[in-house]
Amino acid sequence: MIGISAADMECYKKRYVPWSTNPREHWLQDGWSKGWSPTCAYDKHKHELINDEYALCYLYRYPDLLKVFGDNVHYAKWHWNGAGIHEGRKMLCNGKDEEAKC
Image (cartoon, rainbow, N blue to C red):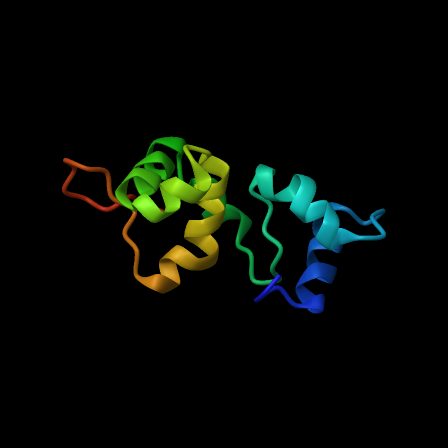
């Protein structure tokens, strides 16, 4: 998996699955669907403050994300925190003028 270092996987292991012998495999099979971040830079509070409504808006605003993630709000939150912010994507709902308060 590109962009997820061994050090990040160690952070994931310490944070979520200290018993796991293969945290990368755990993340791929279970952690991803729960919105668990595989990086050391993960900000838990930031992730939790994005509500489901805005996560859905984020998915529907970007057809490429909707195609990949469907309407899974956990994936949307994970993508927003891990990549979307840095890509300059907006967390806006169609028809709403303000950006989500994250």
